[in-house]
Image 1 (cartoon, rainbow, N blue to C red):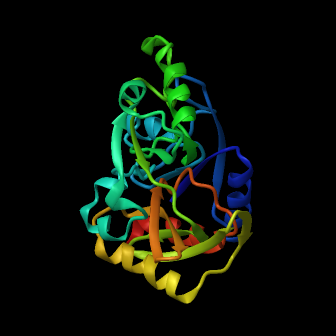
Image 2: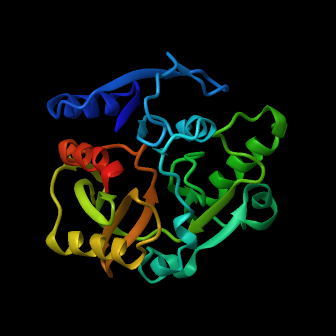
Length: 261
């Protein structure tokens, strides 16, 4: 597998793992708005290329027909196999950003907000109805033609759910149907990065992968423990998700072997 890396703190950590595994890679900058790579990579086999860095790399991978390139994902909220396991999945509702000022009641309630697509247009998090409305109004003041790719747009579809009390949160990396590594990243309200996971949480995550085997060859899934038990939070693009305290040797090995599986 040929590895193309965009320089970030996390990709430097990945590069250290690749060095230990004696897997070669090259560094590249992304030309803003255009998406070209600098320097332009010399591709030996377009069907054995993987890219790590910003989510926007998918455009370059698609334009150059690089595989696997970037593992793009379908919106996880549309995956019926996962619906019974989603945190607050039963009371989620979907709304286009342009509809928020008219349809979201400014009643002081808090909502967990995230884009439906795995686009990183806004980070998932809890906001009040007032904050969400103000955010939407700011975007709607902009001419759509002037909004850069990767930013909130008038037609961005958002998911809103009632906030829930979360006791622990983990991130897990799935490659070819198997959980290959994991990291705790939150305990209560404290952000903590430790390479550990409860046994039942690891089993739950593998079950999430097993019940939806055709979702993607490689992706990240976030799960949590609540007062009502284990729940699935979301999925993320494996090429652009933070590594936290994952075992990057295991992750790099699994990805590097992907082309031979």
